[in-house]
Image 1 (tube, one colour):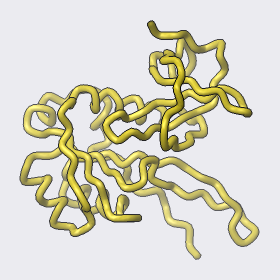
Image 2 (tube, one colour):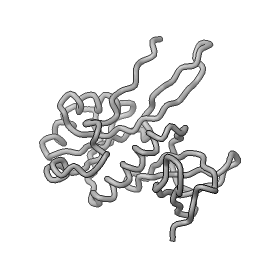
Image 3 (cartoon, rainbow, N blue to C red):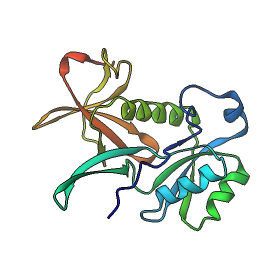
Length: 186
């Protein structure tokens, strides 16, 4: 079985670097709820049509037939974030890979959440998908490559897990962090 290269997870590549007045003025965020295992196919279709999107992918290593294989998996299975006009939203629906399109009321909040998720993925730390959130304190990272990120802290047997979430879909991602770089947000 061949190992496939990583898919394009963001288009354009600078989409979440800063507010793009042209994109923000003409387009709004939609969350595409895809059919099972269709996230990458939807992303390929959007990239081919040059429609801005974000499909957060994380790396998972496993042993397969005696060798280590790295898979690039959707961080939020079943979801692709699309920044689109109404016409571009309809193009996505025509792929027949979408179950539902979720409208986003809090556009600025989603921009911020997605920027944080992107930064977490680019940090180089091992990222773990989080399905639901335990009660915990809201914290901010003080130093290191994740300085400025805000999230929830959860205690686990292996240490303290820092969780960044996308509230709109009630999912998130986490990394293990040392308490010394965290401060409680009031």
